[in-house]
Amino acid sequence: MMVVKRKAFQMAALVAVGGMGLVGCSGQGSDEQGTGPDEGATSTAAPTAPTVDLEQYAQALVTDAELMGAPEDPPVEGFVDEPVSMYLTLTDFSPTGECKELLDELNSYSGPAVAGISAKFVKEMPSDNSDAEQSPEATQASAQTLIFETVNTDEPMSIYRKIPNACETLTSEEVEDAEAVFTKVPGLDAVHLEIFDGEETETLAVGGASVNGTYHAYMSAEQVSMDQAEEMFGAQAEKLQETFQDEASASPSPEASDQPTAE
Image 1 (cartoon, rainbow, N blue to C red):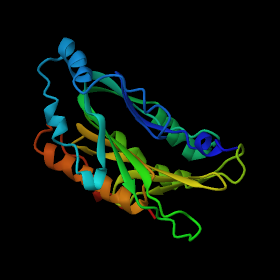
Image 2: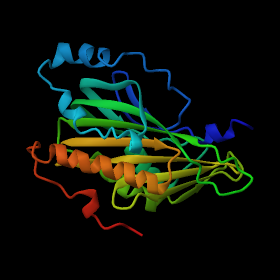
Image 3: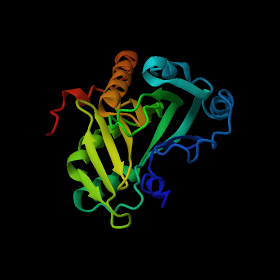
Image 4: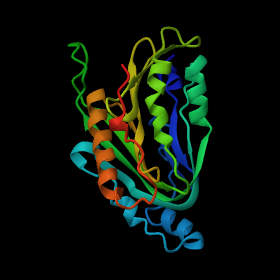
C-alpha cells in the first residue's frame, strides 16, 4: 500500500500536443521531455509559421526564483500551431452529478493555439506541518506554466470558478479513507486540491487566467499551500494582463478577479 498515495493522486492538467505538457503528479513523467530548449520551438515553428515571435509569450512568464523556484532544464520550450487540450483526472475517485459534468467538460476541451511556451520550476519549501513528530525538513514543490494564444476567442480557465462548489469533497470507494477536497483559490480562476490517502496529504493547485479571450496562462503547482498558490497564480495572472492587455483585438471579457467569489 505504499503506492496508494501516488495512485490516488494521479492527475494531469493542460497539455499542448508536440511534446509539451503540464503534469499534476511529480515523479511520473518528468523524464519524458526529450527536446532541448531550442529544438522544441524551432522544429515546430519553422515549417508552419516562421514569423511567430515566441519571445512575446516568454515576456508574460513569471520567472522570479524566490516565488517560482529554480527553472528546470530545458527552462523554456515553445510550440506553434498546435492544439491545446485541458484535462484533470483523478484515479480512484468517481465524481458524480455536476462535478462529473464539469470535469468531463474540462477533459473534453480542445482548442487550436497560434503558439505558446511552457516552463517548469522546482522549489524547496519548508514544511507547513507543525506536528512535533514530523521532520522539519523542506519539501520540494514544483510548478509548470503554459503561456499560449488561442486562434479563437475563448475563456478556457473560467471553468475553474465552478468546479470547487460542484465537487467540494470526494470520497474514494477504492482507497479507504481517501478524500479529494476542492477549494477555490480566492479571486482567481484556480483550484487548490488536497488528496488525503488516510495517512498523508498531497496538494495540487491548478488553473490560470485569460486576457481578452486571446492570451492565456495555465499553471499547475504541486505541494503548495493555499497562500502559496494564491501568490504564485496571482503574480502570473497580473503579469499576463500587463503583457497582453493592449495586444488582443478581441473585446475584453470579465476578469476572474472581477467575479464574485462563491462561498
